[in-house]
Every structure is written in structure tokens, then in C-alpha cells.
Image (cartoon, rainbow, N blue to C red; front, side):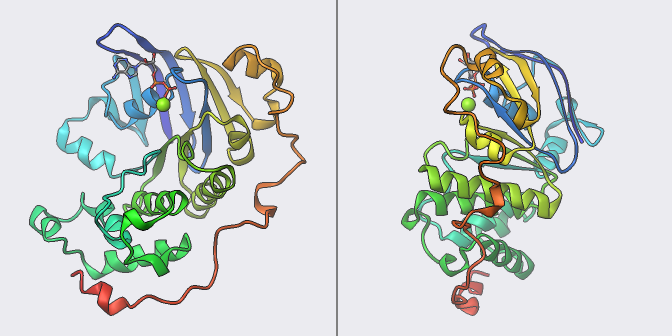
Length: 283
Ligand SMILES: Nc1ncnc2c1ncn2[C@@H]1O[C@H](COP(=O)(O)OP(=O)(O)O)[C@@H](O)[C@H]1O
Ligand SMILES: [Mg+2]
């Protein structure tokens, strides 16, 4: 369970980005954090992994107060959180396999990682993950040869290979087309339920949030203005989050489309097995 209590963040510039927010995320829950640009969504995620230092409040993950951790403990704590970003932050000139394995760098020693040597068990796990997301046939492709959706799937594998307890996902679909966006959101949702993982997904697309999250928290100017199920997001609520707009076209009717009934499911499909031995030559 992740427990955020009274979290505030004032940036050095004076901006009060979060005004004392409380959020509890039970194990296994997929929560979407929605709100307009500047609402504070990224600040919440960055306070949880302490890329940004909270000004006050507490954040506990299974009873460890993240805010109080020293640097060695913080490094260990970050391994318990998988992070997925909009820019997918892949290393362009490394292969798909190597990019996934970089998710393990926290575990292997410096020289080992510098030489890019990974234990066979890590390579096997990377294959299993790539297979799960339908990319095992691409294990030896360079990251810069991939499409946006494929890159994001590599980013997901890289976050999962460290076997996290919590996924922190910041605008995972911001540069993807609508169909690919759905595939990626569906994949994240499925992986969370397979692995009993909880996730906080920052997303500004209301419809995607409604389709794939079980709970929605709406932020506006650093304050929570909605916390509840996707089907209770009425036009009035959306106006309180985003301001005046005609929301009638945006709100998904609950029975319109169930997430897992779509034909464009990305996984699984049969792919030729790559040459394991050659890839194992990484070691
Ligand atoms: N590094 C920073 N320094 C100063 N102000 C920042 C910084 N990052 C974000 N902010 C401000 O904090 C507020 C929330 O930003 P952010 O968390 O990025 O919102 P969102 O992710 O919802 O778009 C905004 O007013 C933004 O300008
Ligand atoms: Mg943001």
C-alpha cells in the first residue's frame, strides 16, 4: 500500500505545486491521475520517487517513509518502483534486449554493468517480458529502429524487470497515436493485474483514463477535486477539474466498450524465436 499524507511541494520559484494532498493506493490498484497541464501530476510522481524533494507531508510504501530515507536506502527503495515515462528514455544505440537489461543496473555491480555483463537469469527474464509484450523477435534490433508503441513496450519491460511493487507512469501515451495509446494502456493494465502491481498513471486524456483505470483522481492547481470510480466522472466533475468545456462528447458511456473485448489486442502472437545463443553472447 502506498500512502500519501499532507503532501505539499513548493518549488524554489515560489510555485505551490501541491497543496497538501492525501492519496492511498492499495496493492494491485490501477489509478489514473488526471488534470490539466500544470495541475501537479508530474510533481506527485516525482515526489514519490524523490526526483523532487517534498516540502512537507509523508509518503509511505508498505510502511517505509520514503521522505525520510538517506541516499543508500533511497536507491534500494527506487528499485521497488518501476518508472515509465513519456519519452521512453531508451538508449538509442543499444539493442532492445540491452535496453530492457538496463532496468537491472541497480542490481549488478558497477564493473559488471560497465562491461554490460548480465547473469543468464536476467537475460531469460528479459526474454520472458519481451515475449509477453510481443517483442521477443525484436530483441536484437536497435532502439532507434522501433516505432513509438514498440519503444514504449520496451520501456514497460525495462520497468518490470526489476520486479517492482509499484509502477509510476507519467503520460505514457503523450506521443502515440490513439490506437497505439489504447494498446499501451491496456497492456499496462493487464500486466498490473497479472503481477498484482499497483500503478499511478498520469494522463491528461480523460477517455483513456476512464477506459483503463479502476480509480480516478482529478487534480486541479495542486488540489484533489475528484477521487472516485471512472463512471462517476460527470460533466460537472470534469468542469471542476479542467474548467468550462463541452464534455458530452468526451465522456465514455460505461457499456460502450469494455477494455478487453477489442480486436486490436497487441499480445500474444506467435513470433519466430530469436537466436538465443547469439544474444546470450552479450554475457
Ligand atoms: N522544476 C520546477 N521548478 C519550478 N516550478 C515547477 C517545476 N516543475 C513544475 N513546476 C510548476 O509546478 C506546477 C505543477 O507542474 P507539474 O507537476 O509539471 O504539472 P503537470 O504534470 O500536471 O502538468 C506548475 O505550475 C509548474 O509550473
Ligand atoms: Mg506532467
